[in-house]
Length: 484
Image (cartoon, rainbow, N blue to C red; front, side):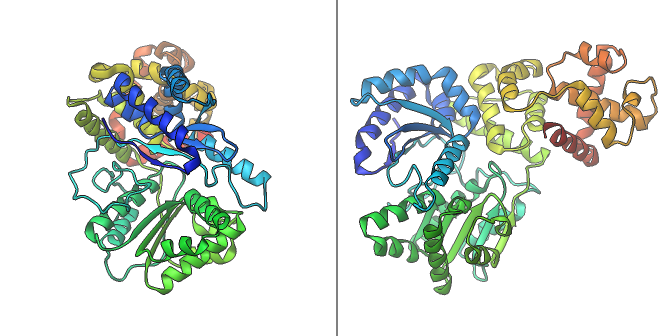
């Protein structure tokens, strides 16, 4: 049985104990693989007014838990929580939006609902990273064991950021200070920061590495103010050899917290200590952040992480399958067309991409390697419908004709010259990927063509994408436009 590490205020011990007990039972009932994939990264948080929320990293994980485990969780919670409190379920995005909304309602107080009174329980799961030397006790709070450089898949979208992170973690001389990694949610920022912390501690066990989310920085500062222990709080951070703060944009609009972060940053830099941040935008775009702090963030090395391209997304899926195979002690594979569908469909977030694969593994199990593309699409269809606007074949035809400088009528005409045939095939491929229409139905909407013509177009585009980067970029641009 895995150990569960708890970070909580003393007032929240009962809730933490109840959650641990429930998790122990769920792990036995669901098995290591399902529990690790869906509940292993969930966290139980208690708001300042006593509400309890199970927070998942993605919306897909939330949906899986709600469908497959929520009733059982409610039963176990009722058995273990003597106070009979209600438990809620939210994705991380929903929870952060709620936190921000409540914080804005209480403007000027510089407090968030999570404040100093939250419970967070993380469940270590198996990783495909090689064994590491033990780390000093007390340095690993908040870090996830699976997020290492060994499990990070690199590609053109993130290779510069990866190289910078490796250099910082090696304690190399001539470093920039501070370093800021930026990119939207799900692009790999947290993975890089965790990996950097693990590597830095392994490379120099005698140095002090502190990793915090901006939310924890905020709650720690608020608690220090309330407890009149700000000196201890400052000493803890300003004696760090490497300070890493994730999601620094979270402090935007919280004036006193920004002030403390600014002074912490300047003190560390004056002493030659290293500071690393992540944000969802480049520092210049953090308009809600104090101008002085924003200026300091911009003065170091700013590393953007771009959306993962298709080859990188496929690499991430292959690495995930390898990891799952090790967890389950059996070979887990998938049909190439299924992996290609996932890579083409889940382009906005690596977490959502991995979540989609987790869904297929949970549903198909050892039969995943025999799962067809149509079966995979059917399994994921409820998630796709709820996550975005409905895209029609007509939408696809309009967008494709505009992109390639054609008339929509050209795509349904009998003309077969390449300047029209290739965009028509691309539009058919998009219709197969982005709609629930059958092949015969798609064919009818392209001038009454047979379903075999549509199937040929889909297979042709799949084959061309592997060697034609221009076509791949065209398709990705069209997908982004259609999804809005």
